[in-house]
Length: 185
Image (cartoon, rainbow, N blue to C red; front, side, top):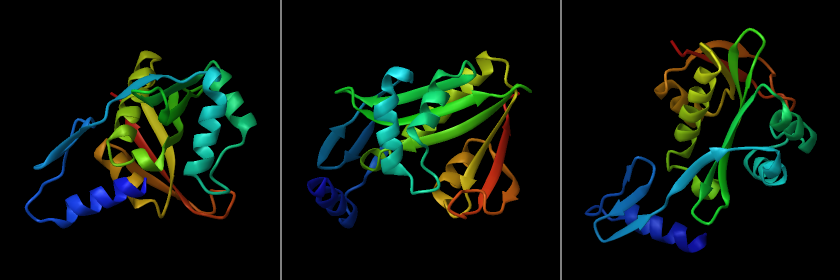
């Protein structure tokens, strides 16, 4: 990880080199090429522990789910869930959505491992869960995001979500949330 940080800082600090992401698969520099590929696959109960451990790494207390919650989410018939995996099969990220009784899709959680961020994995997972929702006749999707998580908010806005409500003290650690929605029509 430290080596990667040094390489990245070297790339970004030199003005004559460019770093570009194309379709979430490649990072290019004028002097080198690093290719990282991720497959998006269904997320099932068989990945429960790996999913839970990744969630613990990505979220602070009050935002991270318990193992029991993941067990429920991954076994619920309403679940629409996917994972992004590296070529070696390690989980780089996941998304879990639920189809609610009124046929609204609820993106319950999205997580990407810190070392795999900024590679459009969350965007690919969001697009995949929206496709899964469409196949289950969902026309409206909602999600909650921490009010100070401007990076995630920007991603969601770029995907067509709009903030509709502030949720004071939404998270169990007292943090405020924002409700964002998108029509799939």
